[in-house]
Length: 281
Figure 1: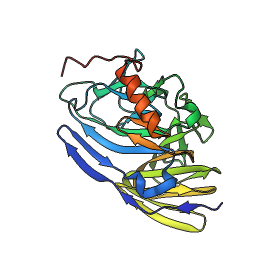
Figure 2 (figure 1 turned 90 degrees about the horizontal axis):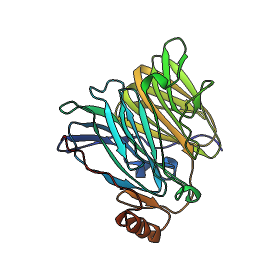
Figure 3 (figure 1 turned 45 degrees about the vertical axis):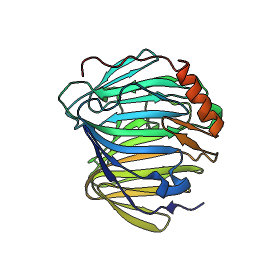
Protein backbone atom coordinates (compact mmCIF):
# COMPACT_ATOMS: atom_id res chain seq x y z
CA UNK A 1 0.00 0.00 0.00
CA UNK A 2 1.45 3.34 -1.03
CA UNK A 3 1.84 6.18 1.42
CA UNK A 4 -1.31 8.11 2.23
CA UNK A 5 -1.29 11.67 3.58
CA UNK A 6 -4.12 13.06 5.69
CA UNK A 7 -5.38 16.61 5.71
CA UNK A 8 -3.50 19.16 7.83
CA UNK A 9 -5.00 19.67 11.29
CA UNK A 10 -4.23 22.79 13.33
CA UNK A 11 -4.00 22.61 17.11
CA UNK A 12 -6.90 24.26 18.91
CA UNK A 13 -6.07 26.20 22.07
CA UNK A 14 -8.18 25.71 25.17
CA UNK A 15 -7.62 27.60 28.42
CA UNK A 16 -8.95 26.08 31.63
CA UNK A 17 -7.70 28.13 34.55
CA UNK A 18 -4.13 27.03 35.27
CA UNK A 19 -4.13 24.68 32.27
CA UNK A 20 -3.57 25.77 28.66
CA UNK A 21 -3.78 23.09 25.96
CA UNK A 22 -2.99 23.08 22.25
CA UNK A 23 -5.03 20.05 21.23
CA UNK A 24 -4.98 18.11 17.95
CA UNK A 25 -8.45 16.91 16.94
CA UNK A 26 -7.51 13.35 15.99
CA UNK A 27 -11.04 12.62 14.76
CA UNK A 28 -10.18 14.63 11.65
CA UNK A 29 -7.60 11.97 10.76
CA UNK A 30 -10.15 9.15 10.91
CA UNK A 31 -8.62 5.67 11.04
CA UNK A 32 -5.16 7.10 10.26
CA UNK A 33 -4.89 8.33 13.86
CA UNK A 34 -5.07 4.82 15.36
CA UNK A 35 -3.74 3.80 17.86
CA UNK A 36 -3.36 7.42 19.02
CA UNK A 37 -6.34 8.61 21.07
CA UNK A 38 -5.11 11.98 22.40
CA UNK A 39 -2.34 14.43 21.53
CA UNK A 40 -2.12 17.62 23.61
CA UNK A 41 0.70 20.16 23.86
CA UNK A 42 0.08 21.63 27.31
CA UNK A 43 1.27 24.18 29.83
CA UNK A 44 0.08 24.01 33.44
CA UNK A 45 0.82 25.94 36.60
CA UNK A 46 -1.03 24.39 39.53
CA UNK A 47 -3.13 21.26 39.98
CA UNK A 48 -6.32 21.48 37.88
CA UNK A 49 -7.14 17.78 38.27
CA UNK A 50 -6.99 15.55 41.33
CA UNK A 51 -6.35 11.78 41.27
CA UNK A 52 -8.37 10.11 38.52
CA UNK A 53 -8.67 6.63 36.93
CA UNK A 54 -7.57 5.35 33.53
CA UNK A 55 -8.36 2.03 31.87
CA UNK A 56 -8.11 0.44 28.42
CA UNK A 57 -5.17 2.50 27.13
CA UNK A 58 -1.76 3.97 28.01
CA UNK A 59 -1.37 7.55 29.29
CA UNK A 60 1.98 9.15 28.49
CA UNK A 61 3.50 12.45 29.55
CA UNK A 62 6.65 13.76 27.90
CA UNK A 63 8.18 16.75 29.67
CA UNK A 64 9.61 19.06 27.03
CA UNK A 65 13.28 19.90 27.44
CA UNK A 66 12.42 23.61 27.69
CA UNK A 67 9.91 23.09 30.51
CA UNK A 68 10.58 25.41 33.50
CA UNK A 69 9.31 22.74 35.92
CA UNK A 70 9.74 19.02 36.39
CA UNK A 71 6.72 16.69 36.53
CA UNK A 72 5.48 14.91 39.62
CA UNK A 73 3.70 11.72 38.57
CA UNK A 74 1.90 9.56 41.11
CA UNK A 75 -0.14 6.40 40.59
CA UNK A 76 -1.93 3.72 42.58
CA UNK A 77 0.78 1.21 41.65
CA UNK A 78 2.99 2.82 44.30
CA UNK A 79 5.01 5.22 42.18
CA UNK A 80 5.73 8.80 43.20
CA UNK A 81 8.10 10.06 40.50
CA UNK A 82 9.80 13.34 39.72
CA UNK A 83 10.46 13.48 35.99
CA UNK A 84 12.74 16.34 35.00
CA UNK A 85 12.65 18.24 31.66
CA UNK A 86 13.42 15.87 28.79
CA UNK A 87 12.04 12.83 30.66
CA UNK A 88 8.98 10.69 30.03
CA UNK A 89 6.53 8.57 32.03
CA UNK A 90 4.29 5.90 30.43
CA UNK A 91 1.36 4.56 32.46
CA UNK A 92 0.07 1.41 30.75
CA UNK A 93 -3.25 1.55 32.57
CA UNK A 94 -4.79 -1.53 30.90
CA UNK A 95 -7.40 -2.93 33.34
CA UNK A 96 -7.18 0.19 35.47
CA UNK A 97 -5.07 2.44 37.68
CA UNK A 98 -5.36 5.76 39.48
CA UNK A 99 -3.14 8.62 38.37
CA UNK A 100 -2.23 12.22 39.15
CA UNK A 101 0.31 14.52 37.48
CA UNK A 102 1.27 18.05 38.51
CA UNK A 103 4.24 20.41 38.28
CA UNK A 104 6.84 19.17 40.75
CA UNK A 105 7.34 22.70 42.07
CA UNK A 106 4.53 25.01 43.05
CA UNK A 107 4.48 28.31 41.19
CA UNK A 108 6.41 27.01 38.18
CA UNK A 109 4.99 26.08 34.77
CA UNK A 110 5.15 22.56 33.39
CA UNK A 111 5.28 22.20 29.59
CA UNK A 112 4.80 18.83 27.95
CA UNK A 113 2.90 16.52 25.65
CA UNK A 114 0.00 14.46 26.97
CA UNK A 115 -0.54 11.38 24.82
CA UNK A 116 -3.09 8.54 24.98
CA UNK A 117 -2.39 5.31 23.08
CA UNK A 118 -5.21 2.82 22.66
CA UNK A 119 -4.71 -0.87 23.46
CA UNK A 120 -5.99 -3.87 21.54
CA UNK A 121 -8.86 -5.83 23.09
CA UNK A 122 -6.50 -8.62 24.15
CA UNK A 123 -4.43 -6.18 26.25
CA UNK A 124 -7.12 -3.95 27.74
CA UNK A 125 -7.33 -6.15 30.83
CA UNK A 126 -3.62 -6.79 31.34
CA UNK A 127 -2.02 -5.82 34.66
CA UNK A 128 -1.19 -2.09 34.74
CA UNK A 129 2.48 -1.05 34.57
CA UNK A 130 4.45 2.18 34.77
CA UNK A 131 7.59 2.89 32.73
CA UNK A 132 9.74 6.02 32.91
CA UNK A 133 13.02 7.47 31.73
CA UNK A 134 14.88 10.56 32.82
CA UNK A 135 16.37 12.80 30.15
CA UNK A 136 19.88 11.38 30.40
CA UNK A 137 18.59 7.83 29.87
CA UNK A 138 16.92 8.60 26.53
CA UNK A 139 19.08 7.60 23.54
CA UNK A 140 19.69 10.15 20.81
CA UNK A 141 20.57 9.82 17.14
CA UNK A 142 22.46 12.51 15.23
CA UNK A 143 21.73 12.66 11.52
CA UNK A 144 23.28 14.87 8.84
CA UNK A 145 25.55 16.25 11.52
CA UNK A 146 22.96 18.73 12.75
CA UNK A 147 19.72 16.83 13.42
CA UNK A 148 19.07 15.45 16.91
CA UNK A 149 16.44 12.72 17.30
CA UNK A 150 15.48 11.62 20.81
CA UNK A 151 14.19 8.02 20.83
CA UNK A 152 11.65 8.15 23.67
CA UNK A 153 9.91 4.87 22.83
CA UNK A 154 10.67 2.21 20.22
CA UNK A 155 13.69 2.18 17.91
CA UNK A 156 15.26 4.51 15.39
CA UNK A 157 18.65 4.83 13.73
CA UNK A 158 20.01 1.68 15.33
CA UNK A 159 19.19 2.60 18.93
CA UNK A 160 16.26 1.57 21.13
CA UNK A 161 14.50 3.01 24.15
CA UNK A 162 14.30 1.01 27.36
CA UNK A 163 10.56 1.66 27.47
CA UNK A 164 8.94 -1.44 25.93
CA UNK A 165 5.14 -1.29 26.12
CA UNK A 166 2.91 -4.31 25.62
CA UNK A 167 2.23 -3.23 22.02
CA UNK A 168 4.88 -1.78 19.67
CA UNK A 169 5.04 1.99 19.46
CA UNK A 170 7.53 4.59 18.28
CA UNK A 171 7.76 8.04 19.82
CA UNK A 172 10.48 10.39 18.54
CA UNK A 173 11.26 13.99 19.46
CA UNK A 174 13.15 15.30 16.41
CA UNK A 175 15.05 18.59 16.37
CA UNK A 176 15.75 19.24 12.70
CA UNK A 177 18.12 21.52 10.87
CA UNK A 178 18.21 19.48 7.67
CA UNK A 179 16.52 16.25 6.53
CA UNK A 180 15.70 12.99 8.30
CA UNK A 181 13.91 9.89 7.06
CA UNK A 182 11.54 7.41 8.66
CA UNK A 183 10.43 4.06 7.27
CA UNK A 184 6.69 3.58 7.82
CA UNK A 185 5.92 -0.11 8.11
CA UNK A 186 2.95 -1.99 6.70
CA UNK A 187 -0.21 -1.81 8.83
CA UNK A 188 1.16 1.03 10.96
CA UNK A 189 0.10 4.66 11.11
CA UNK A 190 2.05 7.75 12.08
CA UNK A 191 1.06 11.19 13.32
CA UNK A 192 3.53 14.06 13.00
CA UNK A 193 3.10 17.17 15.17
CA UNK A 194 5.32 20.17 14.43
CA UNK A 195 5.81 22.06 17.67
CA UNK A 196 8.15 24.68 16.23
CA UNK A 197 9.49 25.72 12.84
CA UNK A 198 8.41 24.28 9.50
CA UNK A 199 8.90 20.86 7.88
CA UNK A 200 8.38 19.66 4.30
CA UNK A 201 7.15 16.04 4.36
CA UNK A 202 7.78 13.95 1.24
CA UNK A 203 6.91 10.39 0.33
CA UNK A 204 5.00 8.26 -2.16
CA UNK A 205 5.33 10.94 -4.82
CA UNK A 206 3.71 13.60 -2.63
CA UNK A 207 4.95 16.46 -0.52
CA UNK A 208 3.27 18.57 2.12
CA UNK A 209 4.57 21.47 4.20
CA UNK A 210 3.64 21.33 7.89
CA UNK A 211 4.21 24.38 10.07
CA UNK A 212 4.33 24.93 13.82
CA UNK A 213 1.15 24.09 15.69
CA UNK A 214 -0.15 21.71 13.02
CA UNK A 215 -0.19 17.95 12.50
CA UNK A 216 -0.44 15.40 9.69
CA UNK A 217 -1.23 11.66 9.72
CA UNK A 218 0.41 9.06 7.48
CA UNK A 219 -0.51 5.50 6.59
CA UNK A 220 0.71 2.90 4.12
CA UNK A 221 4.24 1.67 3.54
CA UNK A 222 7.41 3.44 2.48
CA UNK A 223 10.11 5.92 3.33
CA UNK A 224 9.08 9.37 4.51
CA UNK A 225 11.45 12.35 4.32
CA UNK A 226 11.23 15.30 6.68
CA UNK A 227 13.10 18.38 5.52
CA UNK A 228 13.43 21.36 7.83
CA UNK A 229 12.33 24.42 5.86
CA UNK A 230 13.06 26.33 9.07
CA UNK A 231 14.75 24.78 12.14
CA UNK A 232 12.03 22.61 13.61
CA UNK A 233 10.96 20.46 16.51
CA UNK A 234 8.48 17.71 15.73
CA UNK A 235 6.99 14.72 17.51
CA UNK A 236 6.59 11.55 15.45
CA UNK A 237 4.21 8.97 16.90
CA UNK A 238 3.72 5.63 15.14
CA UNK A 239 1.94 2.42 16.10
CA UNK A 240 -0.09 -0.45 14.67
CA UNK A 241 -3.52 0.38 13.30
CA UNK A 242 -6.21 -1.06 15.61
CA UNK A 243 -9.27 -2.09 13.64
CA UNK A 244 -11.62 -2.80 16.51
CA UNK A 245 -14.75 -1.08 17.84
CA UNK A 246 -13.88 1.85 20.09
CA UNK A 247 -15.98 3.42 22.83
CA UNK A 248 -14.57 6.20 25.01
CA UNK A 249 -16.20 7.75 28.05
CA UNK A 250 -14.21 10.06 30.28
CA UNK A 251 -11.13 8.23 31.52
CA UNK A 252 -11.89 4.87 29.87
CA UNK A 253 -11.39 3.55 26.32
CA UNK A 254 -12.98 0.18 25.60
CA UNK A 255 -14.46 -1.93 22.80
CA UNK A 256 -18.11 -1.85 23.86
CA UNK A 257 -20.40 0.16 26.16
CA UNK A 258 -20.74 -2.74 28.63
CA UNK A 259 -16.98 -2.63 29.21
CA UNK A 260 -17.18 1.10 29.99
CA UNK A 261 -19.86 0.41 32.61
CA UNK A 262 -17.78 -2.42 34.05
CA UNK A 263 -14.75 -0.13 34.28
CA UNK A 264 -16.77 2.42 36.29
CA UNK A 265 -17.90 -0.40 38.60
CA UNK A 266 -14.29 -1.52 39.11
CA UNK A 267 -13.25 2.05 39.82
CA UNK A 268 -16.05 2.63 42.32
CA UNK A 269 -15.24 -0.67 44.03
CA UNK A 270 -11.63 0.42 44.52
CA UNK A 271 -10.23 -2.21 42.15
CA UNK A 272 -8.10 0.43 40.40
CA UNK A 273 -6.36 1.25 43.68
CA UNK A 274 -6.37 4.38 45.77
CA UNK A 275 -4.47 7.65 45.55
CA UNK A 276 -4.87 10.49 48.02
CA UNK A 277 -4.79 14.05 46.65
CA UNK A 278 -1.64 16.10 47.19
CA UNK A 279 -1.81 18.30 50.27
CA UNK A 280 0.75 20.91 49.16
CA UNK A 281 -1.39 22.68 46.54
